[in-house]
Length: 277
Image 1 (tube, helix red, strand yellow):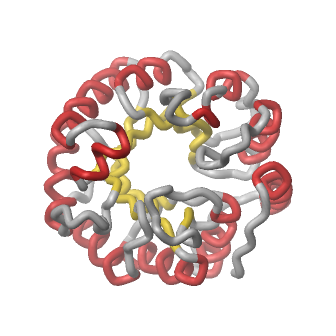
Image 2 (tube, one colour):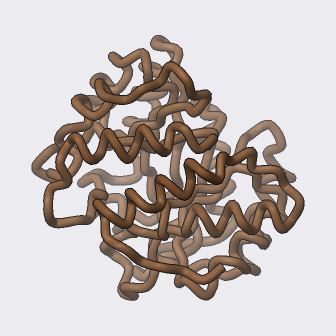
């Protein structure tokens, strides 16, 4: 939602998210505690949270934060289990995304992790530009490993390399995750991948082959990073990920009727974008 220009009414967000809570997802990224000037679309996150029906769902809530101030807001809500923080492996993108250096961002991660531990929350760190960057900044699988080691020392247990601009290939996805999972077996690695529609299947299959079992998606594949130069590069469609999981014999435990309802409401309030399965 964050990239849409027109403000989505709070009541529509609540209606949509309450449907998603009935589908059976492990985790729902429902909002962000960030500056309303930076992302005005999500200025009503606290109001949305108050309207969510959490009594009949096992889905955990995740909120994105960009600094300690946002984390302090997020941890004050007992309904939230996860906080997500974008840490870039590209110095250029870290400055553009959060107006910090990588060193400053690591210090922020340490402070947020201490806050999470004190409030029984878990911090998920997204490694932005985790499959290369368009700026010429250094990148390698070993560099991702170095970031991972430093995060582990901070106490982080969930790390999601993120393909911010759609630069990953099936080969690079499988290579990176095989390396990470073998080197750091105690860490839960997630795949936050952006993709053109025709590349989704091969990217999901590559992540699965490497052993990834935490995969991010967005209904209809909407959203993505404004830094991507290709308008067709966006989030991977959740419904296509589910289809592929079932095809691979991996149970997704999804309520298909509620998923269909959520897709209809997504098209209604966010617009329609179709992807072939």
